[in-house]
Image (cartoon, rainbow, N blue to C red; front, side, top):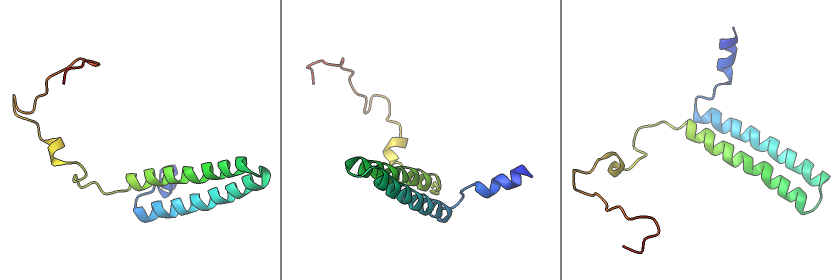
Length: 99
C-alpha cells in the first residue's frame, strides 16, 4: 500500500516537472514578500533573491532529470578513442615554462 502511495509522488514527465517548478516559484515569491515585510531594505531583497534563486537551481535539476536521453548530448569525438601514437600529448610538469 505504501508503494502505491509513493508512486504518486514520482515526477515522470516534463509536464509534471514544470508544474512542480511553478508551485515552487509561487511559494518562493510568497516567502520572499514575507521577507521584504519583515526585513525592509537590502537584507530583505537579498533573502527574496535567495528564495527565487533556489527555484532556478531546483528547476534546472528537475528538467535535466526528466529529459529523454537519446545519447546525442555528447560529442562524437568524446566517445572515439585515438589510435596508438595518434593524438597523444607530451606530458609537461606543472609550472614548467616549456610549451
